[in-house]
Image 1 (cartoon, rainbow, N blue to C red):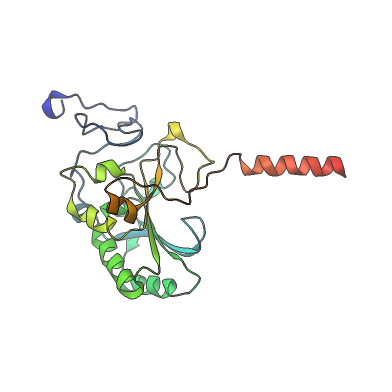
Image 2 (spheres, one colour):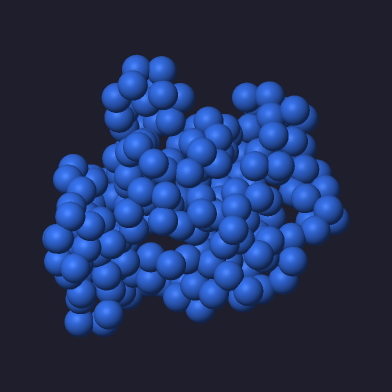
Length: 241
């Protein structure tokens, strides 16, 4: 039984809802396709091992513009169908080092690099390394470089009473947050920067300023699958030829 006698539901793959008595946790939550934590249950200050799975210097798929992307290790959400399940383990990868941080700063100093993206794994459970990096980025570049972050947490979960303060501190440095678990039953390949329709692209500064969730104004989802569109265009050209 859960808190106040509420049964904790368990999914077919063993996923658990540890906050069955909580309401209004955001789109699609709770889901039996993922683990669903109660407020403060997972604390990155204790869970993080300071391990990085990958660092990509120049990418164009992890947010707006040309970016650097840092993939941190460890994620207890364990979403069914997760693309990065190989780095659920907090010890999968190699240590985050001063040398890597210096490399990130050098890469961000390039005029054509718009910013950095934190992915994982779960960035908000790796605050010991990302807070220091975020502070340095703001010290070196101010608001010139933007910081994007993907998280399995929803905005509602992150702002509920009892959540650990390090998460809110990291959020204060972000420009854009893509929130929510990947839910395989809501998979949608037409979405920009998201894998399932429950996920949202959030304008963090405006949301913090207004006290209400504000979506990123530049969201542009596809209406048709691109290969299908190209195929139809080729067929039309062949008929004209």
